[in-house]
Image 1 (cartoon, rainbow, N blue to C red):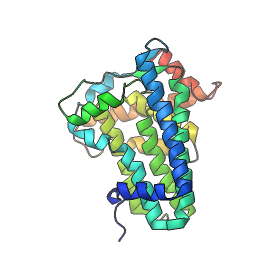
Image 2 (cartoon, rainbow, N blue to C red; image 1 turned 90 degrees about the vertical axis):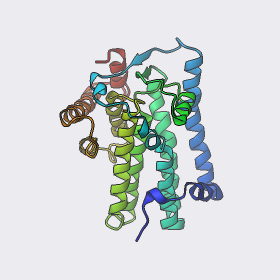
Image 3 (cartoon, rainbow, N blue to C red; image 1 turned 135 degrees about the horizontal axis):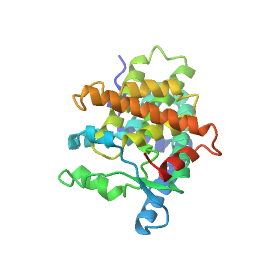
Length: 282
């Protein structure tokens, strides 16, 4: 029986990538994109306030999602989440897996550059509690100035992870063989999305914006139908929010996502609906 993707060794995966020149170079390119488009630019904006507008993107329904610090470990797993998938592919397919993993790494680097087309024009933030009791929150506050909320790269990354995995196993004729692993990865993406809402790192507006961005980035992997299914899974296995609020939250995310798509039909660029929303959030 194949072991769960969650049990892949993070360290061994990184060693496998580092040992392969092609994957190592792709990894370096990806890291450069992440550090430039997320960390460097965000810290520059934090150190020199006023260079760009900063919009608060909270929604009243965010208040229905209780601040739950114990979700922080699941939230911080989002990087290891996509790295472990590469470990699974390399261990399972060996040389046959190098090409798909290479494409996956490159797509992650492009993802950060893609989202930066919004960040470089209008920054965004939410009302994130300054919770310093747990050491992991110290890391969050130190590493993330919290100025790049729309679109949420956390949500974009986990969506890319499960949709790319589905495309890879389909191309290799293993859809049925790895159906349990695909379900594991997809549910993992949903759970991380829930976690970032529980720790107040993002608003439900950020989730809708990230979904819209992923449809623009690659509609073949994340269609409106897939987006609808993804949202329908949110909070299915949690006690709170209340059942009534869960329905309201899911419906709002779907409506906001569809609103972005509708606005894109007459827009000059994919990011224009998000920028328009940031100019007058509501």
